[in-house]
Length: 128
Image (cartoon, rainbow, N blue to C red; front, top):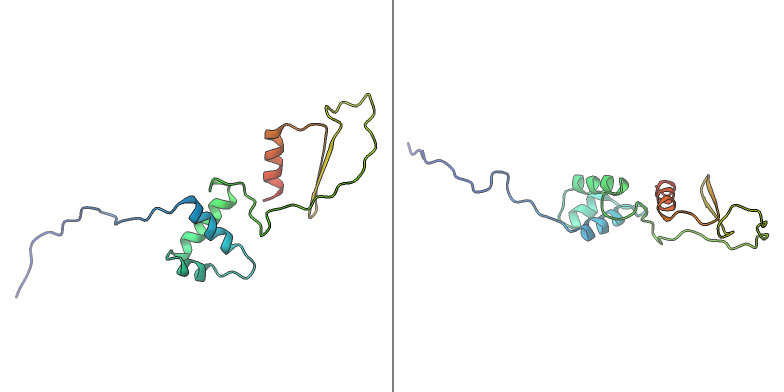
C-alpha cells in the first residue's frame, strides 16, 4: 500500500480570479440586453460564467458600472422642436426655455434653466 503523507501546499487558497475591465463588462451587458440575446451563449462565447453576466447586469441597472443606467441600441431619445409663445416678462424662469421629456407614460416638463445635477438625477430615474 502506497500512501503519501506530505501535505498539499497551495500558495493561493481560493485560486486565481480574473479581473475584467469595465469596458468588457459594459460590452457584455450591452450584448445581453439586445432583443433575443441569450446570456448563456454570450457568456460561453466570451469565456465567462452566465451568472457573472447576470451579476454585471444587476450592477449596471444600479448604475455601479461607471456609466449612467441608459444603454439602448441607439442611445438617443427622440426630440421634437416646436415653437412656443414668448414667456411673460413677469415669469420667474431664468432663461425662458422649456424642456419636455416624454418616455412611455412618463412626461417631465422643466421651465427655465434647470440645475444640472438635479436634471441628471431626474433623467437617471426616468430612463431606468
